[in-house]
Amino acid sequence: MEKAQKDHSLSVIGYQAVFWTALFFFGLAQAYSHNGDESLKEIILYNLCHLLFEIVTANMIYYFLVRHFFDRKRYVLFIINTLIAVYLFSVLNRIFIVYAAEPFFSSEPQDSLGAIITDLNYLLTHYAFPIITISFIFICFMHILRYKNEKQDRIRLQKEKAELELKVLKSSLNPHFLFNTLNNIYSLSLNHPEDTPESIAGLADIFDYVIYKGPQKLIRITDEMAVIERYMELEKLRYGSNFHIEKAVNVSTENMIPPLLYLSLVENAFKHGGNAKGGLNISLELHADEMESVLRVQNSCFGERHDTEAGIGLKNIEEQLKLYYQNNFQLNIREDPKYFSVEMITPAKL
Figure 1 (cartoon, rainbow, N blue to C red):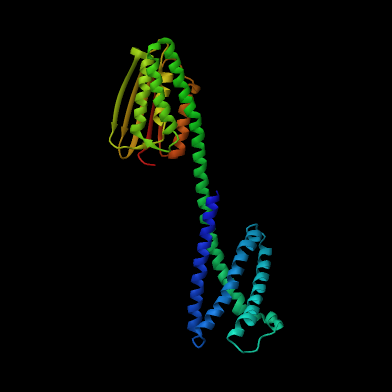
Figure 2: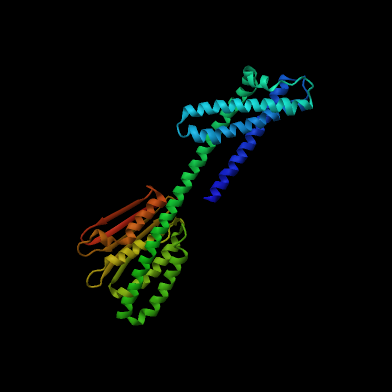
């Protein structure tokens, strides 16, 4: 937030420096073309005096009157206060030129304060009208800059919100996945204690992936598939000969995906695919090319499933897909009495 405010302040300062510098040289060229008989020093001094009060007036109108009256729809007060401000700064500008600037290069009699204040026609044509015109242009461009900054702020806040939601989802998904894996190892240690050391080593690899790869925004598909292979090895120890899997992997392009996306689908299939006798049939198909990545996971299904049985992982996956890809993805879920399948299609690039 502080960095964004600092960037906005720097952009405003930069814009104003360019705007007022360009305006000064434009006014200087215009004045020199119309008053060629005056010295360049005199023209520069006059323009600097006018520019000083134009800068003060324009900024005062924008940052005070526009913000306090116009933005709050108090239009009558805005008009009244703007006219008063323009008149006062026109008078001050004229006084400054007559009593501070002209003595350096002119010996003409100075106008009295009364004459300066009451000569409305001269104030209007030589001071008020230029101030109003330049202030209007300045305020228009400042509104454009303000709109641009507000739009950037909205985009930044939406991005931060999406990143926060992803962190919340991952903080829910990671413990959920690790808890299920630990549960499986506990079950394995009771039924096949001789395989426990190997399962713990496999779990360590998965822990390493979840801890170090999980927080990343995107990872390579091959990295995700490598940890899926490790996970399936753990499950083989658990199911033994009752575990049957068919795999078809065709990765022609190293596409990027959010971490744990595919792993969670596979874990969900193992969790809900076994039958009462301990059997499990899983089919895994992956195709990745330069256009899209397609993962299909199908597991055996026994008995009636309930919505809650889809698990936290499947719900979180859908939410992650929405945050990463908006509506540019497909998540197709099919179910029949024997099989439950999930198809995920994501673009090759975000």
